[in-house]
Amino acid sequence: MRLGLAGKTALICASTSGLGRATARALAEEGVNVVVTGRSAERAKEVADELPGAVGVGCDLVADGGAERLLAAAREAVGDLDILVLNGPGPAPGPARATDTAGVAQAIATLVTPQEILVRGTLPPMVEKGWGRILSISSTSVQAPLPNLSLSNLGRAALAGYLKTLAAEVAAQGVTVNSLLPGRIATPRARQIDEAAAQRTGRPLDEIEAASRATIPAGRYGEPDEFGAAAAFLCSTPAAYITGTALRCDGGLVPTL
Image (spheres, rainbow, N blue to C red):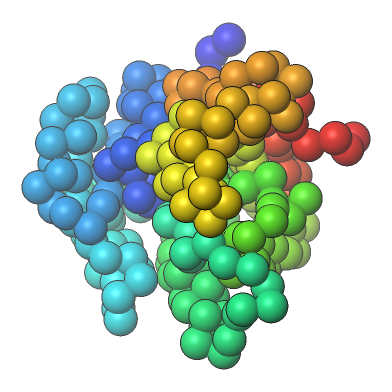
């Protein structure tokens, strides 16, 4: 399938590793001029150097003014953005009964506030051109909240609600807004969650991982490149009639339609 992405521009948040990096690679291979981002400018440039037509920008997205600085740097590097991929690390694991005001504020500051700033800054040129793609790398917790990830569940659900509302508002202007929900993908974040579960329960890590795989109909964790391919399609020209949706990439993990 021809994705029609050659010459487009994209900002991929938190793209020096994991799902963000896989998405950046998939888009770059389709001819997109990608801005790779991460807290470390050196690391962002190293990853960008591995991709055709990519540039690396270092920025702490959740720092004061971080989203504004990142947007300005991306525009300086590639011009107005055709594609915005929202991504970022989740808050620390923990049960709902242990949350407090500071934790809730952190979840919003990490998973909602900078994303809204980036959307607001990139949307006008997309609407003016009549073409744009906004994609959130989220989690299946949006549809089925995950145990011991209460703050992540809270923040991701809030962002998903905002993006769903936005999708209906800009669909007629050629801008699609979607979320891609990874299940158990073999990334550093997945390992962090497994390690936290092992520490919490006192069970060996390999036992935790085996139990997790047993819950997945596909019988394995997904590969980052599989996720990146799905992300590239949702950003593509042929996907123009897909908007306001949350697509699971989870090997059949979530047992709902």
